Length: 318
Image 1 (cartoon, rainbow, N blue to C red):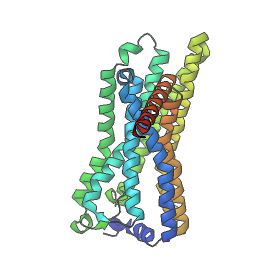
Image 2: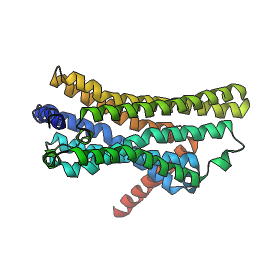
Image 3: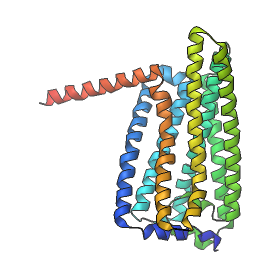
Image 4: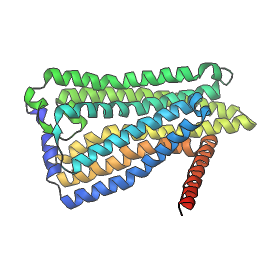
């Protein structure tokens, strides 16, 4: 049972951490995270208000990426608040929470590659784009993404239930995915599969980038402008994938640091959380929300309408 309690040392150190630093970290997390949550909510509202966005493949995938990011940020924030307030709950109740976190974490890179393939089809196969990229197929792709993303969490859950002791499953704990993979060999196998998956996704991204780059060189006039914009979008998606990759590597770096100094470990873990877990979720809104002229114009329009409505209500009340 020693391997099953490997995360216990980390939890004890978190509980014993300086309360002042813990409170400051919690406040900074809220200040850093909630502007992104507000931005994503605003973009989701814009997405639901206009029929064009709900029927066009690129916007459907974008709306899905926003929803995935929102779920991740909100659940992660709840877990952070519980952890920093030293709240422990039965492990059985943590399992579905961390399974959902694991699924939405895997959804992010898969959605990114789906968006890249859609841009590749739009730019490199313009005559077949409308026939290939339909709203029905976009919904099927989203369903496949969720099925693929849920495989690992369910496999981890079945392995945990079949191998863990009753004492382990009934203990109180902080919610983090490590409780699902307490055995070192299982952790290694899961990490290896995740890295292989990211390598496949990165290969697809690079392929799309190269093909769009070649199309941009061969294009002229308005076509050249469109392909160049698509090339920049793919570049930002590549950045997002790099952030996802670094996020996957961070726990192993943190594990090494923890062996030497727990205070440095807490700092490194917190910086990694802000820099990669949250920042990587903020790239999607920047890619499409602000760079896409149609979506940006609609978002500004709804913001102004909301502000005018609020002002009118205030005038009436006065």
